[in-house]
Amino acid sequence: MSGKYDLVIVGGGISGASLLYTTAKFTDIDSIALIEKESEIAAINSHHTNNSQTLHFGDIETNYTLEKAEEVKEGAELLAGYLENHDPDREMHAKRSKMVLGVGDEEVNQLEQRYEDEGFGDLFPKLRPIEREEIGEIEPKVVEGRDPEKDMLALQTPDGYVVDYGETTKSFVEQAAEEANVDVFTGTEVTDITPTLDGYTMETDDGRFDCDAAVVAAGSHSLQMAKELGYGQDKVLLPVAGSFFLADDLLNGKVYTLQMKKLPFAAVHGDADVHDPSITRFGPTAKLVPTLERGRISTVGDFLDVFGLNAAAFLSYANILSDRILLPYVLRNLLYDLPNIGPKQFLPHVQKVVPSAELDDIERAKGYGGVRPQIVDTKQKSLDMGEAKIVGEDIIFNITPSPGASTCLKNAMRDTRTLLEFLDGEYEFDEEAFRAATIDNFPREEASAAPVESESPGEVPAADD
Image (cartoon, rainbow, N blue to C red):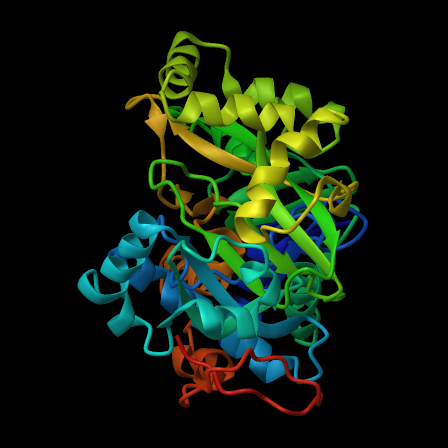
């Protein structure tokens, strides 16, 4: 096959699909193609078993500053509004309570300060502090067996969106594919990208594509493709494989623990699976791996290609991993994969959420978890905690827009504006219609204190952050 398009998007995960949806439905770009190397859309990190299923608002993520929470909040509301608009039967998401839990004087004080002094209570009107009795009403197992002398406080909200990002990705593609100017190609791997006078030529294992503008949203492989075109030479990847432990029916919603601000990885939390609330997932663990995709040895070479095997990369790794907080964390996470030893080492993290949990209650989740391509800045020799995006000449590379899937539509909105500049202002973006289909559907009424889970497919619970 071959074709000439105004825009080609490489990558059929949540990032590429959200951009396809945005440009196909809300711009007048004449021709758009999506190219995905797997035989199915959302086959890798966007698959529901390979991520935390969390829609991050910034309300209970205690490693977020107020400024970052303000930025993330709009992105989460865009996606939540899309889900409210397009998923009334709750096939792609569920609504449940979520909270961040503080136990003991120090943690309780941290949460009180965060809520009152740092402004999170003002930013998220339905986030509220609750104490032991009410925590127990919402999440009985969180209180059961805990020392009654220890103070407890949680910041809780009903805006707990648990998302199947794989099904959401497919929904974006299905919506876009309704448009006559959109073509979707699966099982088509890009083997080379070459700049031309008019844009780019993409060679694939199934033909050639020419385009005026391009977006590469291929996860870890985005940096590999960027480097082949001379971009991102001061960046390498620190791939982190996330995994989970499973238990039976311990939690009703999502319960976070307090996050160490210096760590770029999510604090251990427990939550009920999006499709089966009787399954409770605990994690994620974070293990460094020399691959770009989980369980695919063939991507070791791709990792080495991106790493570069140069002095700057090695020195950056050494500087990062010598950190007195990060190094012990990395070493501990290596233990969690070991038979017998792993569950024993991880159990205290589970017991921080559910004190009565025992070793027999948890098991390593097989087939769960993906790879997050954490960016390393080799000039600063540090982890890049910001959004991993490289904008070149008529091309954008999205590696892992922080915090990933939660802000996919906000990232798509930004990229759409940039693409229209690439295309010399020939096309327009109907942002008002985009917002009407997404964020305008995010419910903002006052919510009750009870946990939220709609049993009736057509019932939409009130929610706001």
